[in-house]
Image 1 (cartoon, rainbow, N blue to C red):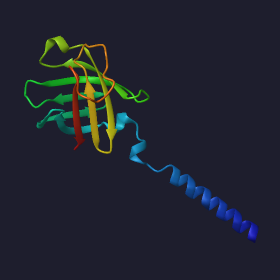
Image 2 (tube, rainbow, N blue to C red; image 1 turned 90 degrees about the vertical axis):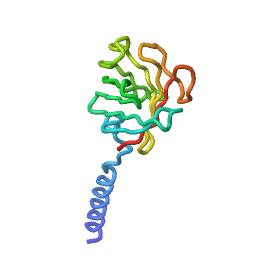
Image 3 (cartoon, rainbow, N blue to C red; image 1 turned 45 degrees about the vertical axis):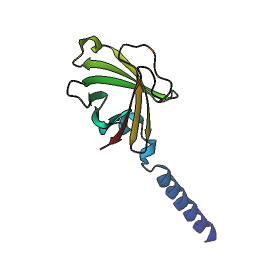
Image 4 (spheres, one colour; image 1 turned 120 degrees about the horizontal axis):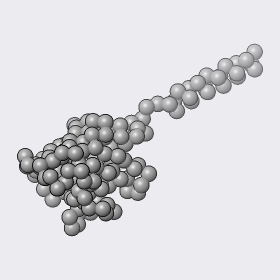
Length: 144
């Protein structure tokens, strides 16, 4: 009787541990999933001017604080890079010189905050930090 009781306890413990290990912790979701939705925030240095970023699948729509600043783009991620990288291909915007150009961006997602830093579309280099310098623009957004 003791041996069968131990087996039952071991089986129950195994089931419990297996269920516990497969919980859906949102911090373990791929960034592609975490990015989905609407993000609202501001450009670094312009905290009083609101901007929005809408992510659906691998599509991005950005709306700046001014009506003439908007972009529609597709993106790919490199989550293994340090810092993490996003390549954004501009599909539509009011500035024809940017259409078809790649914007090289770094990003981080912490809790409900998305921080981005990127160069002008068409510039081949990517920022290496989130510090604002030169032509690098930064954004801090919170998921709605």
